[in-house]
Length: 288
Image (tube, rainbow, N blue to C red; front, side, top):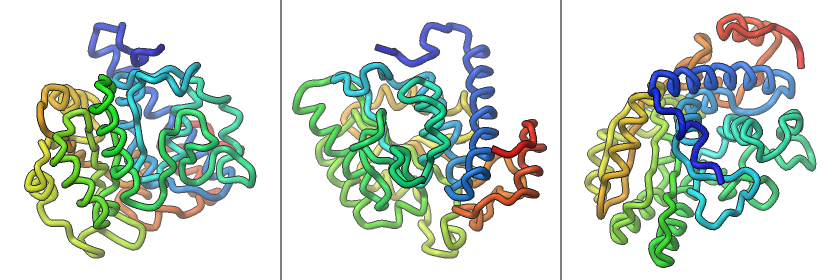
């Protein structure tokens, strides 16, 4: 059983530095991987990186050697198109071999463009249809309550995803059942497939909406690991309510020409763009 990778390290500055280095490492690998296969979703994978690293390296109780460990914490990627970032972390932790990453989105691969719980170790729910992740998470959290289990369920949502009505049905159910073992983290980067959230369907005061649905809301900087730690620690103390962490992020974070641009939701990375991105990230400019 792995009680989060960094739990035994006491010095916060060392833990944060380690996770910052991991985020940079994964950003480089992500650009190289998606350039090599000429498919995938770079923008949303880059925006969620610190959130995933913080959860997997300093929060979740998981066991790569026993992915179905009964008392593990559950993580669900509601915005399933960010699967490349999640796969890199799962491979790094030992859920499967890193070489398998090269099969991303290929025929017969276990690593499809959206997570598949049937085939892929470490995946709790098959997501892709937006809103399915938080709905599934509510069911998992209800099950834990009923079975008197101590594990927590974490769900990462996209801000375009919360335009779906099913999300708000799930939000109401979570509040009704007082699911204080459920933490939703909103990757609030302001950009979706066809434009900005404001252009497509403005959401107004997102925090106020979730509070009106009976959730405890915490606002955080989604690229600041220490601020994410503060938010997740506060979530641990909430009783009688589900928690939403409204994490402000940047689509395409770390690659200047991708930042805030909806075109990078799923655009292939050409050779020139690959070279520019790797130069910014301090990586080696070589083809996969």
